[in-house]
Length: 226
Image (cartoon, rainbow, N blue to C red):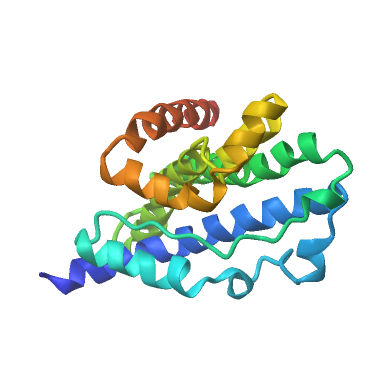
């Protein structure tokens, strides 16, 4: 295994991943705070300091294992979930959906900003000589932005899987009639295991891929505008 390309890819991926998962969790907490729940704020989780959101397994160990196992081709991570007391929300059933949707929405927004920056930097770098120091700066920045677009779209799509405790599951629980919502909410303790099984069988991709394609379509529209 050639370690140099893997380390290079890891360096490119780390910043976009940390930014993506940090903004994802802060968005949950911020919307919850605006809708009446101060739990995340009181616990110091409404901060952009990634240290407050780092989970030893989800943020550090899991991404490293995946990155090494795939020779730098794939890496996925997660932060500590922001605590939300849904009973504090002014309209718990409705607001649960808004709080859950805030995380994926933040990732979509980062994707849009990343693709806009890519377009702007592309125009700037097109007017200068891409060699020496300029190339040393431009190439990694462009690679980080490209990775940011792809990772944030994937993270948003993955979290929209309609299985609690993922955001899509919470949105579904909020929107479904009481009987169906109650049944789906009971899945939450086993949700992660269900997701892992669906992922290992390749079934999850049939749900994630269409969501990714739709999100990319939206992000691409903003990219074309610029």
